[in-house]
Amino acid sequence: MSDQLVQALEAARVRDAELLPMLRRWVETNSFSGNVDGVNSMGALLLEDFALPGLEVERRGGTDVGDHFFWRSSAWASSQNGRILLVGHHDTVFPPGTFDVWEHQGDRLRGPGVLDMKGGLSIIRTALAALADVGELAGLPIGVVCVGDEEIGSADSKPWVEELARGASCALVFEAGRAEDAIITQRKGTGRFRVRVAGKAAHAGNYHKQGINSIWALSRFVDRVQRLTDYDRGVTVNVGVVEGGTTANTVPAEAVCQVDFRFVTLDDGQQLVTKFDHIARELAEETGAKFELSGGLRRPPLERSDASTEVYGHYGRCAKEAGLGDVECDLLGGGSDASTVSAVGVPAIDGLGPRGFGFHTHDEYIEVSSLRLRVEALVRFLLTWKRD
Image 1: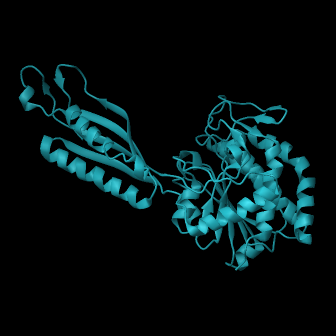
Image 2: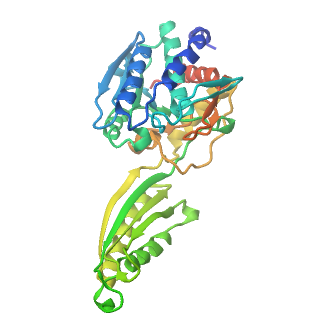
Image 3: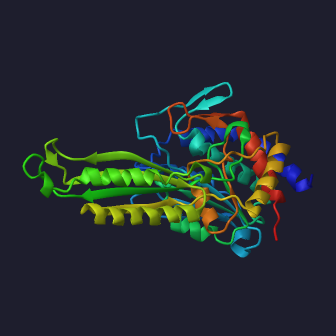
């Protein structure tokens, strides 16, 4: 073990004392995605706590969402070799007044966003503070991006995250840690469509033949797109909402459905979009109804590659040396900003936040002991990742 690593790990142990008080300030600041003022209040705390020697910050204003931030070391700005991007978000899913708790009992800490993902942000900040304490931070090519709209799809922040990520050697994403400290290397891509069908109203008794039943046309669409599900390929299509009609004795003039779809490869996602459009066009000709589709791909998949396997392997060794598990997580169905950076060619791994359970519920908690272990794993990774 190098002298620099020994010193940095000792600095991290010293910094451990301030981790929970800092995390408490963050968790007690409501940053529900729709509470823009709250998200920006959380951002102000991040600006204060990430004000470390060797880091510069850029703030990007959000459009109808909270602001986004990018911290970069001197080495990130001066060299493109071996850049490491750390990724997080500071918005949560809990509206003000719905879950306002800080409950610390033994090793369990419960509260809104403590797992998803303010705990992960506290790991990043503590590791970087330790590196700054021993004079190592400025010389490491590290960037940290933290967005204010991840929980609602990252539509506003996505172009900026893509721009920042391009050319990085790897990306580490600090979403909620999984059981056994499993490291995420694959996530499905996600998509969403709203389908509106316009038929023609008519009296169901006297003029039935002159009507065009929008519900019947939509039901045929639902059946055909649901049949695109292919479990062997990891493709799923789910029509989760259907609305239409006015009265039983009126041929319905309008019907609407909402479709969620998931896929393992970007090619499969793009093929689904094409197939949805093709089915709608065919049914419009067959039924006389008009189909209007709005939506499309939302998040690309996080695809496992040789390069991301190398990142996983290196981080896994660091995690094991810190006393954590290093197993690989099974394929997940939900997306994250790991998918965004992966789609621009950056090998990424995810789920590096504290171990816990219940994210997006009022039972959300972390295991406090896993925080310092994750900090140590990150310090080890940042000091030993290849620079060329």
